[in-house]
Length: 194
Image (cartoon, rainbow, N blue to C red; front, side, top):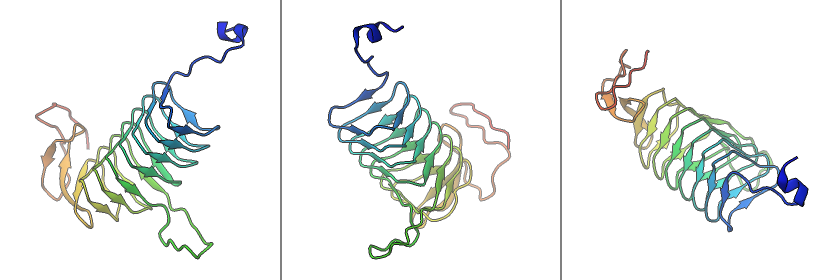
């Protein structure tokens, strides 16, 4: 029996929640997470271990966020979004979840979005729902993603278009349109088989 149980106390959680944050009953928070000012984590949301959830972040019911993710200030992660491990979401990035939103319609259809392992979403980027951001892909700040993004692709603009291929660490390894067979990076010496 745990010592705290003997004393009738509740053990301290193994994560940090700022006093102004709301974590609803039924949310699952992984060990080592930090949830900052005015964040709101809904019932049924799942945060993997080691996540950092910034100021004024909203994580909706049913959302899964993988391990070691960083979601910066003023991001809303709505129902239908799944975020893999080691993902970075920059400040004020926007996720949508309905392709035909109308205030007067009761026909609300959630369209899923997947952000795969190691992807990065730049500040103020908008991700239209129904797209898949590939592993280690990068979305430049302010871009509007309207299509799937390939693994290791860097996309830029409105609409977001392919500009380069990036290493796991984020450095550009090729500006060719075709994906290179070798995505090694001189900066970190990481190699990835095609």
